[in-house]
Image 1: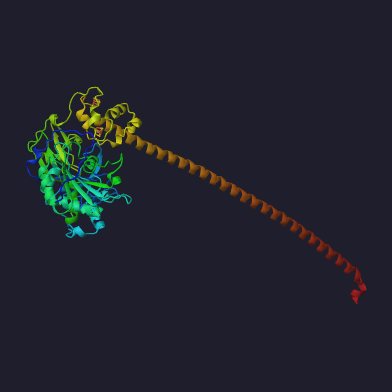
Image 2: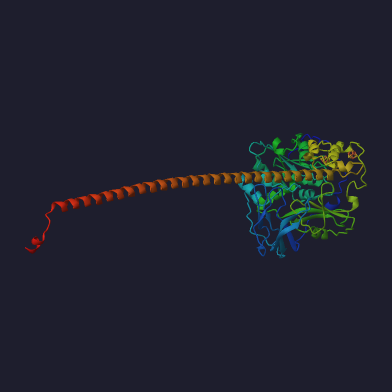
Length: 534
Ligand code: SF4
Ligand code: SF4
């Protein structure tokens, strides 16, 4: 076991808040079961959507690929149970945009029959490219919420000298306990997955960080990590330590540059659940078809963690936890600070679904009548990114999107600390999300307009070129015609002169013959009547 003597650091701001985590950790993780209908979104990751490789009516097996990766930054998706494909169509999924996304719908057959898997027993010495390929083919993405394709993150740029692998087990947001329960119940899977990723990256230093409100998980991980050289470290419980940049700061003292990525300072960061998924894909050949989801909140009587097939409707999970929702309650995917409100329970789980919060009004932070800003500066004091939330709020409100970017809007991790402490109950994060969406829309529109302008310019150039070519063709044709006419006339004139010469010659010939005939007649004796009688 590696002694945890690591010097810890602090990030700016953050808030202490009630964890509400005990309720969902009283019971062990249970299987959520197989729902009658599974909806697999073809895009549940950052990057290009997956492309369907099945059609309606196809029979599929559990673990069978049903959508291949749509590019390098993309991930395939797999059937999470066996059954029949009944539709491939755009459907609503949990996403802040509320837009529909193409999905593969599977009516399950209840057999839950696996496709043939390819286990790899000797994985600890396996070729690094083979390990990466297995992770990519298994459709593994970051399970801490970002859903970035893991194989891509494990292939850092050639000029990035990676020397540290940080594993995020902080799970700082209230109510969420899926990583805690995973570390308690399957610590070997986590540590073996970490070892695989360490081998792929070829790094020296490897640290798992988790908050000190998870003592059982800490002990379990420490035991599993014994003799591996993997360090397991407890960090102070303060929200949002689970933010990638914040955990890196706490464990290493290093700052990730503004709008930069950890690889720029030699670090790769992965989540504990991602590590477990990596292990299962490499060792057992299992694609990412399930994950642990916390189902909790004041509107369920039996909060707990459920091992859930990806694509399971949220209401199926709720049904396992004795719900009693009233019209004032809300369904949220994720936690109360950073979660996505769901329009109803029919939406399917995706790879990034870590929690289903059936939230009563009391579970939702800082609910109150919005009042004018009193410029108290509390929001600035708690911002973990050291931003100026109050100024960003004014610019977002005034739709001054150029100015708000001068305040590094895109460094905002939407942690909600500022809204949480605001005495005027201003929903600050909503303003930042609005501003980001508007800026993205404007950029998209600008790109579209630029593209249209370039197309128009090309079209004009083409029309001009065609006109020019046509004119040149006409000119050339006219020149040819003129040349032909001149040649014809000259030929005709030449022919007329020759005829005349021939006619003159013929007349002269005829005159000469006539003269000769007359001369001969003169020279011959004249016949008489006597010559004739003799
Ligand atoms: S915390 Fe609220 S009231 Fe205070 S400065 Fe920030 S936005 Fe204004
Ligand atoms: S939501 Fe953004 S601005 Fe507010 S505290 Fe978090 S990082 Fe700072």
